[in-house]
Image 1: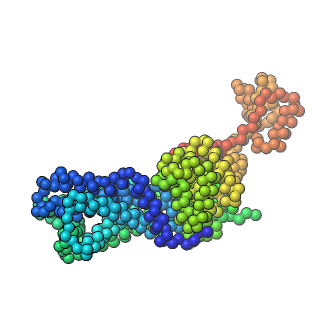
Image 2: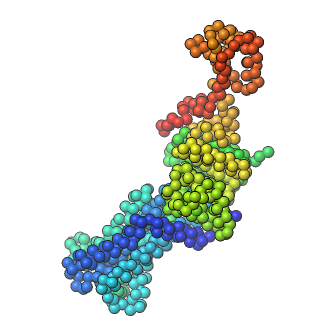
Image 3: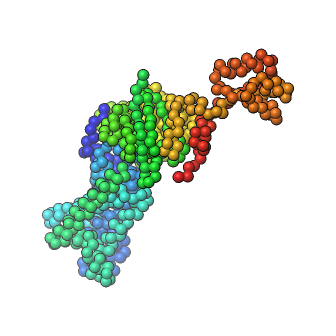
Length: 253
Length: 314
């Protein structure tokens, strides 16, 4: 009765399971979909006029908020990966010959899908708040490409962090830097306005080129340099996350 | 003649420099319940993890259904099912979805999967809670769901690691009945427990594990016979009868205060009849007669020098 396990079928089964998890966990939904919206309203309505960024603030902040929408969804993934690893269900999958990759890719794809929903909500909100873009269709496709690459890299890194964590609680904590990093980038205010030290950090950390390339694309003024740097960061992070997750999975399960 | 489905010889496992299993030999006949009995920290879970391919052994050979766990892990996994110490159910899925997940991962055809899920829900009395999330289940229900999930793949050999730990007496009895049904269906069950009564109730053979060594192996009765404590106790109405009995029954120990006499006996009907005949012969009147067979707790104490529940300082 047992057939050889088909990685694709197994990945689909795992994806369905992970999506149910996301939909049934109110905290995950709040963090992933509502927090970015709350943050957006706070930044644009409450603080926005105080920031002098040289343009309409909602236009300045939207690329950064798109990244925050990705970041906020990650805690749920890390906790859920760690729960799988620590609560015995992984042994069940292993004894059933479920392909190793399926467990990991199920989490990655589920995370990317939930990010897309959060990002769609943020973009919709941005337009409602007066965001205007002179981007061409090609610019938009480029922006979607950068966003997808970022979500993919962040998802792999998060799966690795969840794998490596000893408990689901510490897994939730492990992704906090990914939520804080966008604040120390050009997401909310330009790096040039930050103090010594912080400014250099903000200029060289991966979120800045990602945000700047996105900002350029959405404004209809794409910058090849930023886009290349962004994609290079994403590829590096995704690869490191993938290798780390796989190695940890082999060792622990 | 029953062939063995689990054959373990010289199994060794260590975590760092701490030896957990130090040369274990086991032989489990098909269609029986085999119980590995031992206190916490004896190495029971490690044994299950190695036998089910979840962990690699450091030495020795293990054949499960004729397949070597070291080289044919996939073939082993195809015939076994494992229910671990902590219920491995998915809390955010309903009972039915948990079972369906197993059916999907086993790549059962939709119709067949549905049929298997429905029949397991009925068999484990989970129909009413089938649409509720497993997070809302009681401990006993989680265990039942856990075992039902294991049965989706119709394993020939089932490993149960402390299946009743933490369950109330009623749920424990339900679990015992389920195990008996499984064996009646021809399944082989490898069960670990720290409850001596559980091994006694279910197992055809018991191996006693203590600090990584097997200290005894046999049927529950064989193990009980290894203990010298088996005896008959007679109580009398007065000292005169006690004196008379003590004279007739040599090798007995008397207790004048309780007016009792303790006679070593193997507890078999034949020797009991002989004892009663002798008392009759001498017209000795016995007020109370009882046979004391040691339970497995006594066995454990006799074999390992410490009680089964005693924590072992490593």
